[in-house]
Image (cartoon, rainbow over all chains, first blue to last red; front, side, top):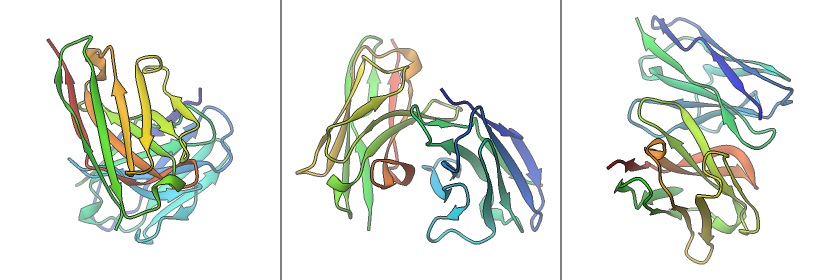
Length: 107
Length: 120
């Protein structure tokens, strides 16, 4: 099974800051990686798929990069509504696995 | 508008059974694989099961294989999760999720979730 390791597990940043979350896969997953946002008490929301493609309707301040085993998720110019937990997910092979999540708070 | 609405959650004793349902609308249901994903209290997301659009292929996480069964009714645009031999560790919010395209993730639409509590 492929293990997904996210870091950090939590972070605090100020409005307008740039935020970077990393996701490491235990083996090569090519670009079969997505990022989800889960606001408190809500269902997850797809932000990025195929490592770099922005889902329709998602603001351009969200960006994904990487391939193989190392991936990065960036929020540029942090907004109050970005308070959430973010998950990476691999879909290269079953079982589909997700990272443990990164909880983002506003300072 | 795509909609997914789960139902069937509740409180059940260890060893008991529950059947979750997910009613969908707003897309051509038979063209898309459907998944169940769960989230234990205060924990992260865990993929549970997937079924192909035509219903011919199904997959399970090791933690539920042999106890849970996914099925779908393409005439009524619904997907189900039959959960048997429930354990305390199955306590979670269960979400149904639609794939963005074809049979594989990512999941572009999710329901609001239904709560399953396994306790004596």
